Length: 281
Ligand code: GUN
Image 1 (tube, rainbow, N blue to C red):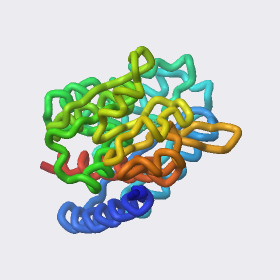
Image 2: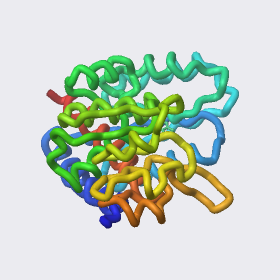
Image 3: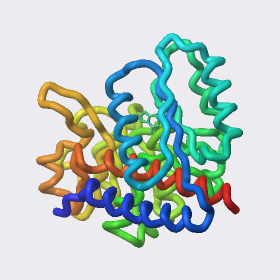
């Protein structure tokens, strides 16, 4: 079984980006900039944002985090986004989710200039991805996709099964795999026989948030299995895949932690560099 090392793949991607940022700096006399807006004091969000900032600095990006208290008014955030949209030292804007209840997530996402939307959440980018045009692609599915491609560069004709239909993961992952000529099945909580669907998969992506849902006998022996889950349990953090069982039956599997997670942040940096390059055309 191949243990897919997301930490190593992310370090390699960061190193490529670091070199590219040096070249871009030489060419344009400026570097890509990432601004993250963090509202409130949820611990997981703070940890994510700290990691994003650290990684952004490591590859040489200009990185800024703007923090607001939980009680901040929506208008303050919308005004700040407007200012950042107009600031040409800012290539990418990310508003860390989840947001406090009084702030309308969709309004915030749609306020970000699509050309600076490093999350790929703006409806314009969602539409571009599904139409097959160049766009920012949400970081987690992009990371999953790059990991799959490392194991199997030619995905044409492969059967992919995705568990979970979220805008964040399942739907964009579907688009990425369709572009590669996979036959894609999206499954979800109302799917009738999930095990039977999973047993068809050459590529299985679990992004549903149910601890250890995917069992050893749900997986074909030559399947590539990508575990997007991060679930807190009594045993600690586990994925959506029963790791011990599936590692005995699959061809390749991502661990949790150390699989998809590190790639998500590296892909955010990649999206920031891509936004910068498109803005310099
Ligand atoms: N919170 C957890 N994951 C993400 C992400 O990918 N983007 C944003 N903006 N917030 C998140």
